[in-house]
Image (spheres, rainbow, N blue to C red):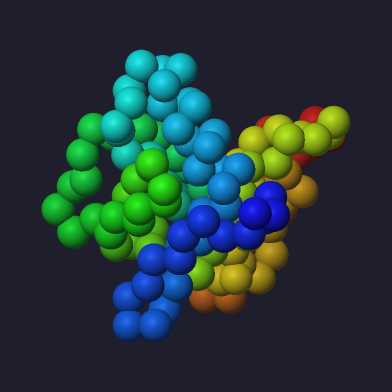
Length: 140
């Protein structure tokens, strides 16, 4: 299996919710074991902030909340709240490990622009982003 071949594409009415690559699924499992929370779900969310207006976030949670969408990716589960799902629908989560950067990368088809570090983005409905820079990409 190729490193970027999707491990899962959970669908609702033929729309892909989220694609998780094998390397991302493996890292999610590794991180949950390192943090001594095996079996917890990884919450993937979007919040206001960052230099492009919206930013990605992730945290481990023991169980889904009411109205969450659950994505099964091999041995790991991801949960997404309804508001974040509007921004993340169709995205691919990958784990990148290179000389310049190691971390999760979200390829989001809903983003019309993103900051240099990839942790902040703007959608076409979000309006104009602030002219400021985020702390993670302004240092590069």
